[in-house]
Length: 247
Image 1: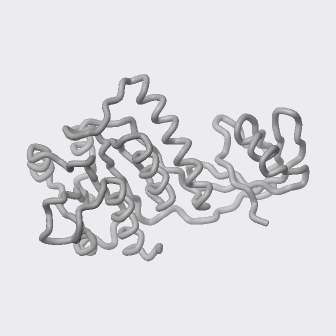
Image 2: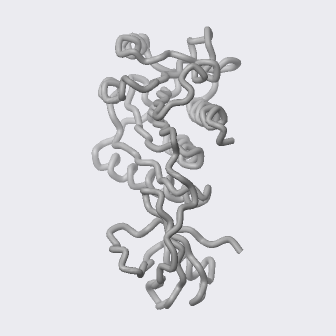
């Protein structure tokens, strides 16, 4: 039987006990119908995993005893950063989910001239919480130990200037047909960190492309037909993992 996995509850000191409440409690107690003595695994953002045993189930919480600290996977040698142009809710949710499943280390939502949506600060806070829950769930489902961090949405120029120029930073443009993404990435293997920048529907404007080139971003593309933004994101992340030998 597969051992259920949950992110380690925030703010809990590891004193040998882990207490689950709220949605995690309901899922384990009501949906999975866990009983005392059943095993449960918890993971944190550092990649540490804690094999535990249920000691007690009450009406509102489950108490687990940590039996073993384990590592299900080593920290990835290569960190992938996805800089994704903001999309409408369902599409952005899909990108967050698949990026977590594909082992992305960091996601930066990007505000561009052609962004589909505009978010108030209140909506940004709500959306960030929503995205992080999706990333947690996808990390658990894919049995990875590292939950990707998700930044607050950033303006195009700010996000580009904050990227580490010593690492390969690849911007996807539908107008670039000279060399495909899969051919381009081979020039940088192996790498410790890579950033992929993907625009919203309609792509990047000429002004944004000029700014990217002036700041030494590598402009590349995908051969064949023009893909939706969310499809392009999943495609390039899959290509990266394939080249790393992880698929």
